[in-house]
Length: 253
Image 1: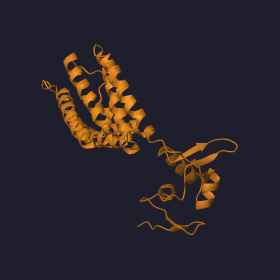
Image 2: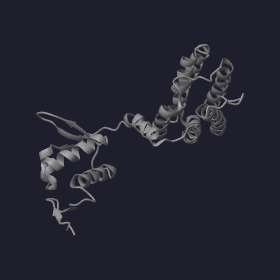
Image 3: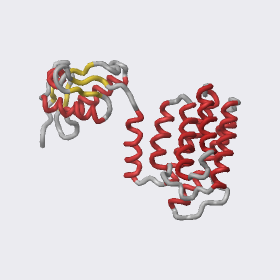
Image 4: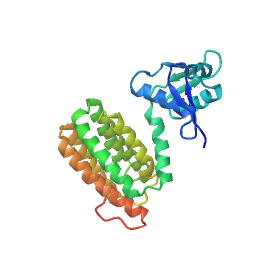
């Protein structure tokens, strides 16, 4: 049986060497916890590879591995050369939205699963948009509706414009968590080429968007949520039918 000998660092913490937890992963966990507890903040220095190794009583190889993991997780930004070293990153969750979308694709989630999650996110976003939307947010929604109206004859451009409208609603919620989740799910769910879009469907979608923007402008949070719920359920029906090679119902958005 292999014995696991505790390694006592200069800080007095014990790191247990062994298969279950590498030294580098323990350093990463400690730094993640410090960020979560606000003991470390964006821009704070983590020092150089040599500094990290000395601080935790480990080899530079272990420190290098910890820095690589922290960088991959988006926790640290590393600069090479003179005056370089690592600092706590300034958060940009949108950088990971596409990465999450890739993982969802690789996991094999279904169109129905994606659309159910999107329904939850967009309904809450619409409700919050009615509560927190600014004059600038409302102007953006109105501008996107006018743009989409001029693009009804161009399916791909119309689809992109409608996606921007849904994103604008999410951003009008002023909830960054919802926005990032929306962006990630849309990488998976929103078609680049909307093959089932017809002018009739496009006009029906546009009518819903106009009504939704009106409810948000009137600060009708409950009404905005209900309408978005109906809207996403219709979109869900189309997406599920498309992925199942079925035919969407006539009244689907």
